[in-house]
Amino acid sequence: MKKVLICIDYNPTSEFVADYGYKLAKSLNAEVCLLHVIADVQYYGVQYPTFMGYDGFDTEVDLNIGREMQQVAQNFLETVRTHLNDEQVSTNILEGNTADVILEYASEWNANVIVLGTHSHNVLEKIFIGDVASKVLKHTKIPVYMVPTKK
Image (tube, rainbow, N blue to C red; front, side):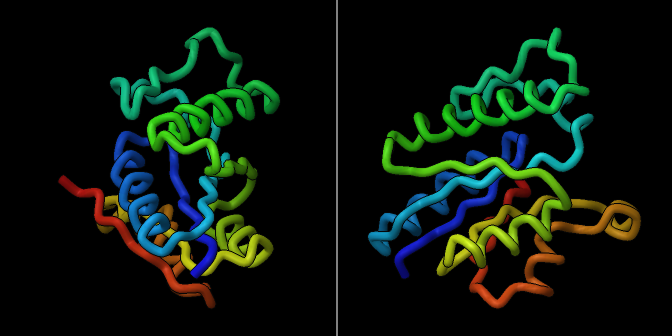
């Protein structure tokens, strides 16, 4: 395996996903790409405590401006790269339906494995909003490494 795609969202559990995905990639001597998909702008309004050294964004940011959202996401990915302490890690930010974007980019980038976190959604959330990991698993042709994030 030569390419490991680590998909992270704006959630403190991303630290587990990034760390485990990076360890997998290093054990395989593989290239690493961090992918973040901007899907729901309101999600970025959640103020989590600092994680992986990322303090969040300035609450003055107008969340309706795509350019600023790109900058927020870029700052997040740069912080994650610093956390991993590896300048060779590439990053990419895309917009759209998260599962679809992950599948499309993994194929374009010729990823050998996709690393995803499994969030703990209750049954009603899964019915109404679905589960990215489930959708990726259902439609992928690329192996998926699942990182459980439930404490």
